[in-house]
Length: 344
Ligand SMILES: Nc1ncnc2c1ncn2[C@@H]1O[C@H](COP(=O)(O)OP(=O)(O)OP(=O)(O)O)[C@@H](O)[C@H]1O
Ligand SMILES: [Mg+2]
Image (cartoon, rainbow, N blue to C red):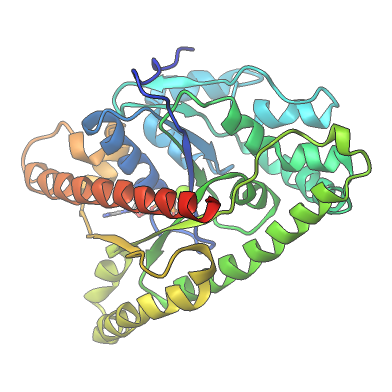
C-alpha cells in the first residue's frame, strides 16, 4: 500500500473533519467522497478519508469492483478495524496505518470494515471506564486522536460515519477539530442538530473529567485536546426532488423548513461556532443519474467519464463542488483565526 507525498514547504497543520448527521441517507458519504476529490484533484490538497461506517459505502464507492472483491475476500483485510483491534487485545495503538491511494479520486483512504460494528461494545464499555479516569478506557476512547496524530502529513483528514450517536461516532466526534453536518430538508434533520449539540457538550465534559481525574495521571495518553468546532451545514435536495412529483405538500414543507434552518442551527449549535460565521456552506442539487453513474464507474461526480446527458450534470457538479470547497476552506480559516484569538 502506498501513500501520497507530503505537501511541500510550509509547516503543515492537519485539520480533521467529521461529516455527521444521525439521520441516515442524507448524502453524507457522497459529500465526503466528492468534496475530498474536489480538494485533492483541483486544490492540490492532500486528503486522507477514513471510512468509519461499518456499512462501508464509501469504500465500495472508491475501490474498483476487483479491488473491493480481492480486499474483502482475504481473511483479515487491513482496514479501520485493524487500527482499533490491537487495543482490545492489550497491544496498544497500531503504529502503521493501513493507507491506500485512490488515484481516480485524488485522495488516500483507510478502508471500512463490517467488523467495526463488533467494536461498538468495546468502545461503549471502555467509555464508562474513561469517564471514571480508567487508563484502559481513556486509551480506547482516544484511539482516533492517536490515528489523527499519526497522519499529520495530510492537509485534511475526513471521517465518513454511520448515522448513529453510538460509541464509535462518539470517539470520532471527541477526536476531530471540526464537524460538518450534511442535511436533507426535513423535520428529522432539525432533530438531528439538537441531538448532536446536546450529546457532544456532555461527552466533552465527561472526557475532560476522566482525563483530569485519572487513576494514574502519568499513563494518560499525551494528547492535546481542542474544542470541537462547527464548520457549517450543507443542504441536499435529492430526497425532496424525488418526492416532489407525488406531493406539493412536501414542497411547501421543504420551503418552510428551509427558511427556519439557520435559526434552528444557531439555537442548537451556537456553542460550537462564533456568531459571525456563515454556517450554510451550500446546497447540493439533485444530480439525477450522475450520482449512481459515478458509483458504478468508481469516479467522483466532477470527473465521470461518460458522454451524453452526463456532460451537463457533470458541469453542474463541478460548479457545486468548486463553490463548496471554497466555502469549506473559508470557514475553516475563519474558525482557526477565531480560535487563535481566543488562545491569546
Ligand atoms: N446530489 C445527489 N443527487 C442525486 N443523488 C444523490 C445525491 N447525493 C446522494 N445521492 C444518492 O442518495 C443516496 C444516499 O446517499 P449517501 O449514501 O451518500 O447517504 P448517507 O447519508 O451516507 O447514507 P447512510 O446514512 O446510509 O450512511 C445514494 O444512493 C446516493 O447516490
Ligand atoms: Mg453513508
